[in-house]
Each structure stands twice: as structure tokens, then as C-alpha cells.
Image 1: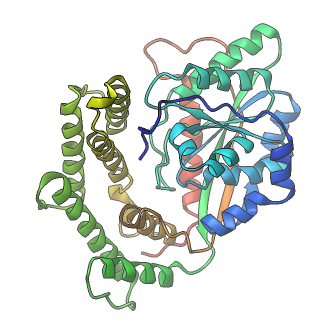
Image 2: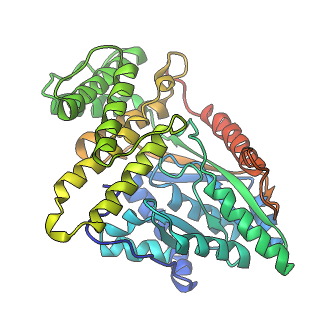
Image 3: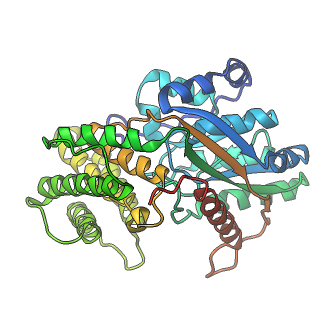
Length: 408
């Protein structure tokens, strides 16, 4: 559940001290967490000198990584360790509502909350203040949410450059120097042969579907064929759950049709009308906002939490289905990491959790600093700073994707 209905939103500020972040780095707690919980065993920082140079120059620094795994904010701790700094990071409110330990840990590592379902002035002011003072570098994920596809970049949100420009204006007024954005490319690479792992995970998924597991021998094409069959089965189950019957046609058209049906079902309940310019992500955002505002504005005696939760499920599922892009399993472009990612997305959907049991290494590549002007962007145009950020990140993600092992 990405929308919290248990209690109204309350801003969670970052922990401002250095004692806990220093202890976390000194005792290598992030190393333990990534090894035990995410199977990320190794890392490589590239071009960290670019980050270090901005630090030594006293700039307000915004780190803008691609966001493909839940491990992403934690692995940036390795980059911070290399340049000897601590970080702040903006994190969705729902992440602070899992358990008390995780909320405690998130804050001590520098995270603060943002309410994605409405206007959160405190979160914006906190982010702008961090960049203005230059107290620590700030991490913002410009894609907004985890996209689960390491080799593709989703559209970037303009809130990143809004925050950066607001801070740049304040720093310029105070004569305190620049605000810069460093794109950061993250790429996870398999340390072991992924084929045996993939066959084992697919056999478990096939057993869950009450199928006789297929042979674990064969070519990469056979492996992809099994994966596509499991994907079709999952999609059919969701079609039956939300529309009453499984549809026919190719996988991509069925996926797109189900996304549209899910969005329309939720939009009709809240009298939302999608604009022609609204993409799926924007429609999902509006549904989540409507669910939250309607639920908490209604009298407690008239609320039906199960109904609202079902609407959130529809929105979440629509966005989740976007993480199965058509081109990801195209013959000639299939890599071991793409197979692993696709299997883990299905595991997350069926079991509620991906099985990160295959050892991985993360490459952390720091891009060139992008100076942020203090003025407003040109009217009627995409912010040029956002265009620079998008172009750098796209180039980095595309280049890093080629380091995975090609299977078919």
C-alpha cells in the first residue's frame, strides 16, 4: 500500500545530528543490510572525484540518481563514505509507516518524509533549506518512484529542478555560491551465472501456479519462453480479479488494456476526468490524492476502509504493470540482469516480496555537475536544467546497461 490510511499525514523531519550517520558508516551497517537484505555484496564508485570537487567548492549539492531498486538510497551510502560526507534524502511517507525500527533507521540515515498525495510545503521547505545552507548533499530521485527496470529511464519530475532553482536563488541572494545537480547512474550486475538461479525461481513460480515445472535445461530462448508464460498467467489472474475474465491478445496490448480499465474504475469513483496530456503516472497520482483526501475528510462512521484500499490497489497495480516494458525482453537485447529483474517483479507481485538471493554488485557512476541558475525557467518550455539532467542520466543508464551479460 503506497497510500497510508491508518493515520493522517504528519511530516517526519530528518535527524540533523552526525552521531548516528557516523556510527552507521563506522560499523559498516549499510554493508551488512545490503548483504543480508538485498544480496548486494560489492560496489564500484566511478567519477566520485566530481562529487568531491563540488563538496570542496562549498556548493549546495543535489544528487539525482535513477531509481530501479529499493536498495538505491542505501547504496548511495557507499558513495558518501568514499567522499567522506553524510546525506539527506527525501522519502515517501508510506516508508515511515512500516514499523518503528525502520522509521528510526530511515531518520538516522538522513531521510525525511514527503506526502506524495498532496502539497507538502514542509518537505519542500526542508529540501530547499538543505541545499541553501549546503549542510549536506541532498538525494532526490527525479523519476519519483522505483521503476524496477534498471536499463530504462522513466520521465523525470520537474519538482527536482523547482527545488534546486529555489535554493539557487536563495544562495545567490546571500552570496553563498552555486547549487549544482550531479546525475548518478546506478547499475546492478550479477556476480554469479543467473541461468541456474532463474530456472530455480521459475520452477517455484510454476509450482505456485500448480503447473508441473518445466525442464531446467535448454537455451536462453527457452528460459525467456517460460518467463513469458508465467507473466501471462499473472496478468490473466489480475484480469479475472479486477474485470471478471481473462482477455485475449498479445501480452502488451492486454497489459495496456488492463491498466486503462483499472484507472477508469478508480477515476469514476472520485469523478476524476483524465486530461489528454495525463500519462499513467499522473493519473495514478491524482487517484492516490483523491483517495487520501476523500478518506480523511469523510466522517469516521461513514468510512469504508476496504473500499478505499481497493482503489489504492487499482492505482498501484496500474503503475506496477508499467514496469513490464515491451522492449525489455526483445531478442538480441536480453541480459542476465533483465531476466533477474523481471522474475523479481513477478515474485513481488505474487509473494509480496522479491527474492534477492542472487549476489549482485552495484556500479555508482557520478555525472558532471550541472550548475543551476537562480532565475526561473523559460515560460512554455521544459526547464533546460531538467533537459540536461535527463540527457545525462539517459546516456549513463544506456551505457551502464551494456555491462550486463548478454543472454539472447
